[in-house]
Length: 407
Image (tube, rainbow, N blue to C red):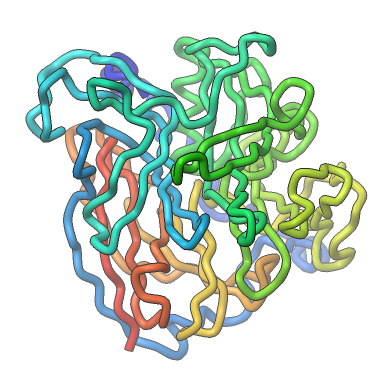
């Protein structure tokens, strides 16, 4: 978001909140036969609430030790034995400012996404790809041959490792033509709920993947796949990767979750989340991807064409992050609840679910009158045992951090 767009959030947030409040915040009431085909409803038990107690501590704001900016997202991923955070819109501070809290008013420039090196301190990252005056530069490059300019955005999620021997990774992203007014409303809607109901008048082009390599020790995008820089057209296919992406340490696979196609109308139907997977070593071959067709049909090489509660895995999740937790012995999806500012954890025996209900581990306090909280992020490298989880989230273009300890 630009600072000018942040000023407009007071209007757009009110519109979106009224739409969300008017819609159902839980899936619609179904008949028994329909419930049998709704694979998004909670199933089983949440291992956290069933087998454990927990305590949560607020740690503070995450800042860079070599740059100053306002930012959001920060999804984490591993490459070459180190962990990195992929941020969304990064708003530069005024020249000479070293503390974002002391930034001067106005817009000082931005990039649509950036990458930073994580450290052993969850409140400190080291920004990468800095220019000569110390401002972060664009991580996912624009391509003018595809018509992309500075008014295009890339909704990137976690960096995923493709080949540990050659230090090759990938990043999923959503190509968006930023349209004044309309896109702002959609962006706020998706940040809150993960859903879209405005059709493809919004500038959403498609979801794609890029190769990431270590050049001079720094993760760098070296190739974007697809004739127009993406594989999955946003109008007709799920937006794979715009909700979450995950390299499963217990299998050969990379998993990606994405929202419904833009052609899907209505708040309920447009709020479902769909899933694909691919063997990590085959991540750059679209023909090798498999798509989840629901628990009744399982994984199929045929691209998903039926978008219903039966073929979906979640509903109205918002953006988040999936990790495997050794201590809990399950997969955990970290997210924030729409309207509630709650940090929520749900668990599953497999990446495709079935997912349990949510457990609230923290309630954030929005910064500013029109502040928003969204995008749950896990930092599993800080405690490989899994006995605790460090979690970050966006609070009005600030990254806040908490730590959840399991008993």
